[in-house]
Length: 301
Image 1 (cartoon, rainbow, N blue to C red):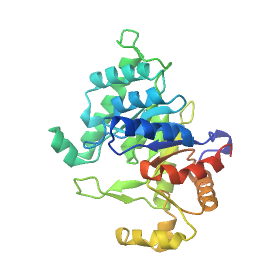
Image 2 (cartoon, one colour; image 1 turned 120 degrees about the horizontal axis):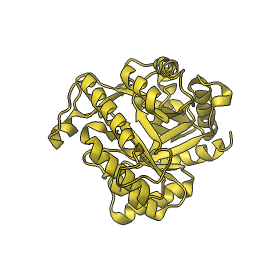
Image 3 (cartoon, rainbow, N blue to C red; image 1 turned 30 degrees about the horizontal axis):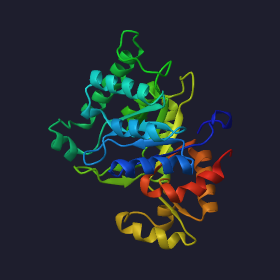
Image 4 (cartoon, one colour; image 1 turned 90 degrees about the horizontal axis):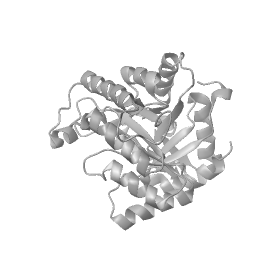
């Protein structure tokens, strides 16, 4: 894990996943800012709100939060068209954009869009081409439009496979760990959690690959569940039917599940920062309110 002097201050994001009407969307974004979230994020899935227009709308009703994609499915995007979108949105949001990219993992969405899904290796190859081409285009003085942020728009790369970790170590300002992997052969995006020990190995591999970096990246973790409760076991027990290979204690120890009192969750987050180096945490929309008091306790720590 990173040395203490390398750890950044905590940042907190909410990934707004539910489609909404105009006023509902704007209300959610205002509420995220009111609760203190540092970043408002939007995913890239068919059946969800489109990321770039949603971020522009979020910018219109908020002042402080950064705005990001979490994450774009590279297979949905042509790099030249993506560079145009990214530069435009950075300009329209006053330089608040953070670009998140990943390979994509839901085959049924690619099928529905009439786009090739490809093998895991092909998806990583396309992600690499996308990252490198978008970087090249946006760094050119000849590109129109020009992004606002210099020297570049912050880049987040999400994923925990070996080749994605290598790409992230080479290019990303933010290395995002999902804490879950795709069920082999599943086409609808069903995921299984990564255990604490498995995540140890993935983070260690990333840090090894990133040893030659001039500046350490920010490390992000996507949290799937946040529940404030006095009875951790009672809340976690129903999850066990989906996690038949885990004991109750192993389920409670999953890095992507925060269950307990506010004080217990604060302690878990601090322990995970010490263990893995995660200082940038993303919660899903369903946990936005529950995580707010935890976030408040962690400010400045």
